[in-house]
Image (tube, rainbow, N blue to C red):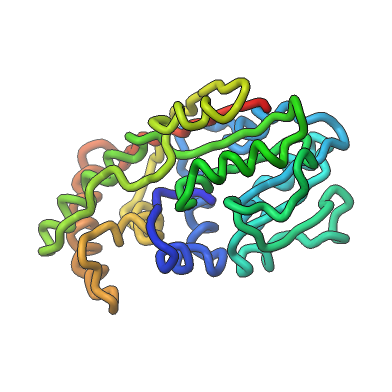
Length: 272
């Protein structure tokens, strides 16, 4: 699950009951990233997965990492809390390397202890209410010596977009939410290190290069626009904030040719 959102169960349902917002975000990363190399390949590199090893993709969404895992020869078990996401992922029988797929909670994985060679939790732990419990579950299902990769946004990722949002929200008469909203960033490194025998942190420095206002707004509308206090139930804030944000983005594009939004990802590589 890729993005800047955190929050409660209602927000999670809004974001992930179907694939539309996630696909828009992933497409933005694919089309407008400054780096040309593959982020997904970098994520999976951390697993160091061998042929025929069993990999749990916890929070698999609609299977965005499946192709890369298949290329490494992995057998995949996919689990996600959203039935809407799971319903759009490749099903067992559609591909020989997909061993299982179902709805499940990272805080209580429906998997036997020590059953997995590798675990991938890609952009999912910041959604989990009890991060320490989720980390214990990852450790539990790993075999001794098994490896896991846990990815997330850095605490300063996309700060330029968040700052523009704050200006636009205030100009439209709303109060932006505080910057620190994610439950899981590099700042939770001590929690990770306390649970695993080995823990290494790696960073992926990149940036969005949005060439047009509409390209930037399409991404912005998938979640960042809603980071305000006392969000109206009818989403009436969106039109007013979008108008202000459009003006701010256009000024940046007029000045620099693009809207550049630095984004930094974190990859914890851990071993049981």
